[in-house]
Length: 277
View 1 (tube, rainbow, N blue to C red):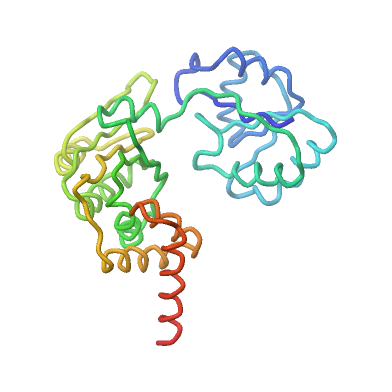
View 2 (spheres, rainbow, N blue to C red):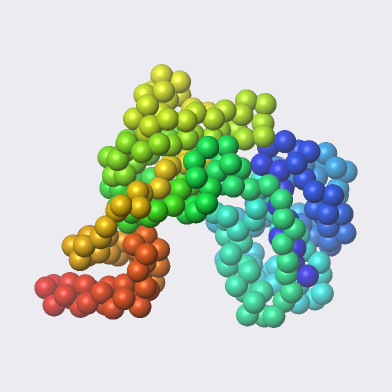
């Protein structure tokens, strides 16, 4: 059995009794960074074999994990903090388990995006998690263009070094919406700054940010409307960055249209592009 175990995002006390029980019982713990995980495990007196699994070695390590599961081993999968699979390579591991019919389950717990959503004071009724956007401005703006009409609160992961460029691009593409910057959540210096994107940019120009960051941004107004030109523009930009399937899913969600409709338009655009080349 594979257990996806949520772990604290800062404060080590934010772990469930069930998570501790599972980590004590499994044969092996697959983790993102052994150094980070050892701090948590040592704190609770848990000693198990650790197997690193991250973006750089996932394709190589995944078959080993599947082999252990095939031998009847119980394995816990944890990240450096929060819910597994959120912006980490665990998703492909789950797909592999499904193909092999290996059982798995989730041991729920802390989640940085959900905590930031609650701290932000922005509407929690509907939200759209965007993860990390591309590091380069042009690619980042292209993605922002595809999601700017989503009528739901937007959640992003961002690094301290890229926060100011992100806020600049977000204001330019999304407009001067209300936002919140949630830093170091559950830790000693937890901090939440809320205001218009322009004001947040001014604040962090004066006070450079540190620590782990989740950015929360107000969703589009319900008065937003789409034209055929809007659809074509968003779809072209999405296709420049993503695969056909990913672009269709992103634009369909953003514009509230059917995937079938977007897919047909995307095929038409690709055909037109080929005929011009």
